[in-house]
Length: 191
Image (cartoon, rainbow, N blue to C red):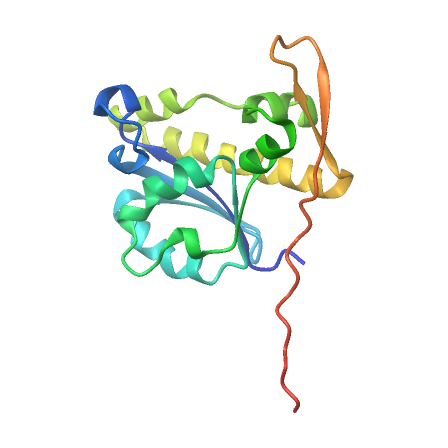
């Protein structure tokens, strides 16, 4: 039961080379894209709207993303007043795969091999969309990544594995995974 799960991805205003550190919190968030399993809706939150997302995240049974623990959560945390993202139930698909494989794989590698579909751009494109005021293109790109992350998650749940491309791009490799939905909360009411 995927009732209150949220798939999340975000885009930043800057890139690491510009800030002189590897701290995602210093990049600034331009947009957060989410998919709500509960309502089957996609929504984009611009920087000034992020506060609206905080109560929704706090009620999630799980937040699903790709590189969320090392990138998205640290970048988003400065915008949240009442919530510590590291305390929330989450599934970082990249982190889970890295533990199983012993190396990182890109979302592009997985979507190409598992879904026969590539990403619509890159994080550098997203920064450029933000800087040039192309907010609709930024939303489109970010929500497409959210959709791809959701589709990879669903593929993995359904088949118990995902595929990814070898580093040289010549082979399609398989990774066994266990991405079952979290158990629903237990109701201990006696009445």
